Image (cartoon, rainbow, N blue to C red; front, top):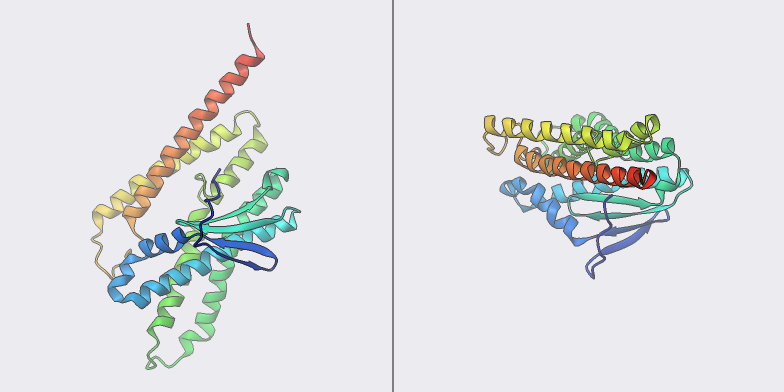
Length: 254
């Protein structure tokens, strides 16, 4: 489980649709690091990336919280580091409702992707190409990338991504005893494969600005992130196994 970051005096706070929202300063810093490749085009493009990241992550977390409210559990949003958290007592609802809440974040991102694509198709791409509006075109490009790629990435059954939460609840529906451990094993395997694949992509790609993977997709970042997620899943799996053995020993003292 991800822990809510400690409040700081530099947090931004407001309410939208009755939902409390807090933005930790690390969100802006890590968003800028993630899109630092745009700095070569000018600071305004880096700022545009950070703004699009803010909109996309906020929309994603709103999907979780709105779904939670529909399931009878209010929540609040915290944006920090590389992403955000939708925080509520979602463990109090049944597994199918938890699955719906977990899936609502990526679903919200895909909805935003569709809205941006609709705007691009019906308005942006109809504008006279001689008009110089590079920031608008790049902003649409960033939003399309973020809300398609990140939403699909979040559905991979790797902890603590939304797909990992869904995998846990689905597996425990079939086996209350071993389901969580199985989902962690699957998470470890998939995260390791993705980390290795990202290293292979990195070895075959030279990150020059303007190429296919840069700066929207950094295989080095993907390799590091999924390697850490694989390690986290392995540690969680071992902790679950130890806890299960301890419980079994307590039930059978002989």
